[in-house]
Length: 182
Image (cartoon, rainbow, N blue to C red; front, side, top):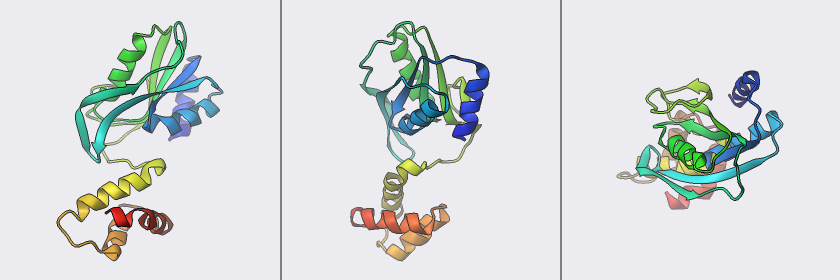
């Protein structure tokens, strides 16, 4: 999906001066796009919204901003997924206050119910997406929720994670790191 996203951005002929990633989800996507689009100027802002799987705070919170001026620059603002759209709206509002020349937004996935549509996205999905760079934290949250009122059983945990699409090697590794915290 990230290759498709990069192609869409390239075909638009938008010339990017700087990629700004929304941490944490946009970090990996932004780094890959910086490589695929030949943009070496990259920075992150931190916004927190999700507190658990499917659970958000009341509103997204800007945790940290830019360290350099973006005045007059063409910006590509990147996140991995747009669910409600609140995070990208806050990020775009923050960037606007820094007076960039132009800002366009990009995300791998967008949810059909989002209040915000990025300029570039790869696919629309109504499914919960677990990215490879968040497997451990996602599995921990899923298992805590699953075993909330049940006795913990590692074999049941393995079967449950298998039904969610995790491969055997990932399950073995992740459970070795998190089982004591479930």
